[in-house]
Length: 116
Image (cartoon, rainbow, N blue to C red; front, side, top):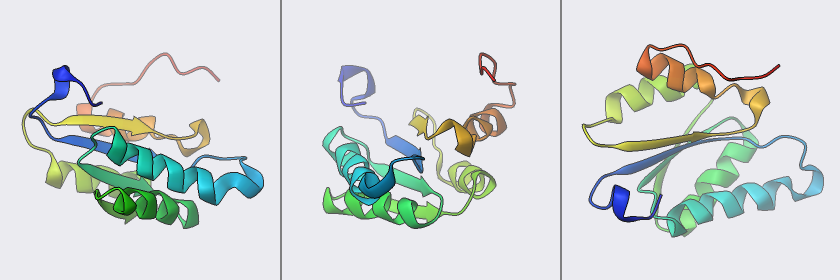
């Protein structure tokens, strides 16, 4: 997200918990939050429970403001309040978290191409 195409616009990352990481889960989530800052993200919305806190802590360590929300509907509601014209939003998480629901709710369009 840190390139000329998004220069001068606000970058928001909605990051969900990554599943099945075992003992490495906390560090991996913290690292992803930190990398968000390194890649020029301006605000992180961390979706989930304990590992979402790690995402937010990593983002904070990189100087990025963040919010922790429990679920997709709360993330959607927060995005609807925050979004401004020209914002760029990245939505990413494990497939099990169904983060595509956030994009679908925001755009009003059915998300296709998801394989079972």
